[in-house]
Image (cartoon, rainbow, N blue to C red; front, side, top):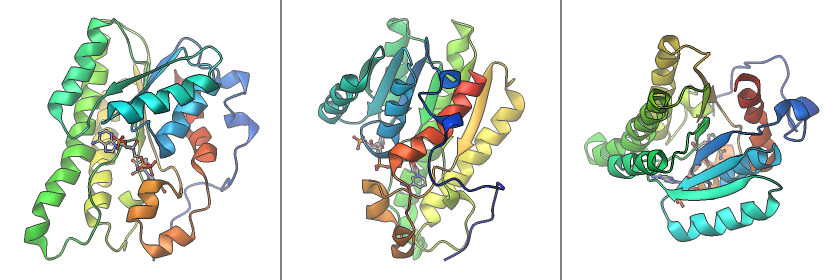
Length: 255
Ligand SMILES: NC(=O)c1ccc[n+]([C@@H]2O[C@H](COP(=O)([O-])OP(=O)(O)OC[C@H]3O[C@@H](n4cnc5c(N)ncnc54)[C@H](OP(=O)(O)O)[C@@H]3O)[C@@H](O)[C@H]2O)c1
């Protein structure tokens, strides 16, 4: 298994006051946040952190009404002032994505911060390659094309309402770790979308939209335990509640 290049001087293994949702400097009052894949795992924990930080509205997105409704109800119970809502939005479907943004426009809802957290598709080796082509297409359709359409629609809002925005892309160290057995489809899709956002960030003025890509750390979520290589599972040391606080600060700084 490959080791990771250190990007920072200090590795944190627990939240600290500067990034705490209860720190008044990170207050999210007045902001509406949408999170793809907000039903469970990292997306759900991110929703909780934004609620704790006092966001005006948190909208969780996913593919199934029932699980969304249950998750939104559980989140609402943790909220003091935040309105928690849910909407169906499948990042694998252009129609579903476009319907989601149309429904927001007709309800006059502006998304201040969008967290692109959902990931879709099966992990596995890329060989033999020909039979893997449908899986490769599916992975790229969600993680690259779907996320790109979400981003485009998010930015399009500025035509009807000018307000600073923040886009948070939950990527993965897998985007740049090599070798990473059985991760070819996932890793290459994460790398492609991170690259796309890097180029987009060059063209979009940071005062209108701050674009941030983050690796959340290794967290033993349902998805991670299902798809990860056994060596990775052994070193998953965070939980999603802790890691969700690590990126909320970026939104607080730049919104
Ligand atoms: N866990 C880790 O160690 C780790 C490490 C690096 C990066 N990440 C990244 O962190 C993010 C979250 O991972 P996780 O481990 O929390 O995953 P998870 O527990 O499996 O949660 C994924 C969420 O995405 C939703 N989802 C799946 N397919 C979707 C689709 N086509 N459209 C909309 N929503 C969809 C699922 O909800 P429904 O099934 O109800 O739609 C679920 O709520 C991913 O981008 C992942 O690549 C995780």
